[in-house]
Amino acid sequence: MILEEARIGERAFSSLLSELEIDVFFTLAPEEIAAVCDRRGALNRLGLALHLCVVEMTGRADLSTKMVPQAVLIHVVAQLYVSSPNLASLRSLYQDRSTLFRHRKLAVELAGFRKAGAGARSGLLQYLRQEILATTEVDVLRGKVLRWLHARKYLLYPARDIRSLVRREVERRDKKLAVFIDGAEGSKSCLWVEDGDRSRTGFNAV
Image (cartoon, rainbow, N blue to C red; front, side, top):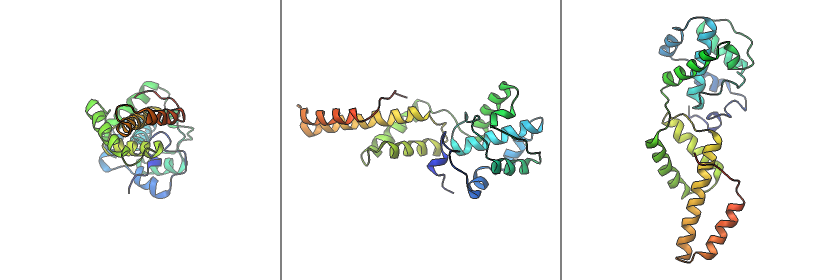
């Protein structure tokens, strides 16, 4: 199943998951169940299992404040043979915050994700600059960045940083195009670029 962009990142639970999505993204592999069942206590096993599935689906490890859909909870507890608690969020499973952070870290490791370093950033910029030749729509490019990072199992940057990166690269492309069109003077195209800049909101670099 191809992972939809809507399920990558911090807005993954903004709409209901289908039965197929739950089956695909919240079904643990045998080796994952073995790693999870190595934890002490039913709630610890359930917490780690949910963290693992969330990381694999979303590319984010810090979504424990999000509400856990009841259908997801039922699906996961059935695999672990534990009782289903009443949850407001994944974080509510944990009385000890240090265990919560350990589970986040372990889930990232078990899922095979890692932080995007300098090499990954360089590759992402090269990819993004190539894609900008085809479109300068910020939301479209943002989706492409999300998929690029997730496909390579890099933890996602915060949403605001991804949007800032895309806008900065679009403006970079606009200014290069202006210089190309107008040559050394670039006066008319620079005015066009400045008008376009005013229509976009401000941003911070990643």
